[in-house]
Length: 385
Image (tube, rainbow, N blue to C red):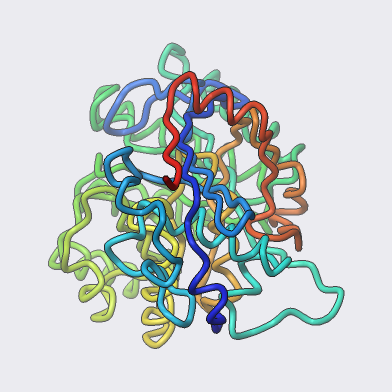
């Protein structure tokens, strides 16, 4: 994407910040590390006005930082190819990309991709239901626990999901070790019945396993269509090398995924060496431009891309815009959240894929009046003097 002199010279006239609130379709329970995640969610959104045109996006921008941004030309924050400069990415990249898309009347995926879609083609990106948490801890009977999680998976299936990520690691904190591990296995088996042979299953231990526990679970599920094991234990090249060797000896085709949270700074190097298959840094932090750059590097090594996105409803929708630019893009992580004042109805889930609209920017419609009210109530406004 080449920016014109007019675009680079356009001045940021106004910045408004607000928190928008919403909730999940279902309360999310515990995982292998922490307790109940709850139902309520919020997103931090900035509305930029540049040359009379607005753009909305997730942002970490503070009022103090905004003072040095307002009145500056767009070219102070992006390069000639439209990539947001590193110091400003977390603060500005999403509203700036949305603004560029709205100004050019193009979706962001079309702005950043070197592989345009065919005329009339709609972008369709694989996605998975990420809502299957430890909602069963109050149930003493394993059969009841399996039934509950199957019912939750069936809810996702009815909404169009075909692929599911399942939280495991109950024995790491919330249940006795053997009992919790046994229940993990039973629940994964139960959900595989819902997903069917074509559905891909991912299991995520949130570092609650160790190497031998990971092998125990994978061995017990060798006949289940597991696509990846995520965060089995904290990243360790020696342990992952052992696990990869063990899987290869068994001819068990399960990928190793890691990278969310406080990931090891050596993780990409370990992936290049073959110890990890799927990288999962977050879509909000370190963000979209980071992923454009990293994803292309991963493609060079035949590695896979699956940005983490949990708890931030904005990130769900923007992550799919990466897919045409990254050959190894695997899935959008779908956390079913509705945010007041943010209309995402143009995005649809169908047969295990997310259909991404060809609307300008990121295709999200914001209630301007509600945003203005929320900015006054819990945010701030900074205007050019």
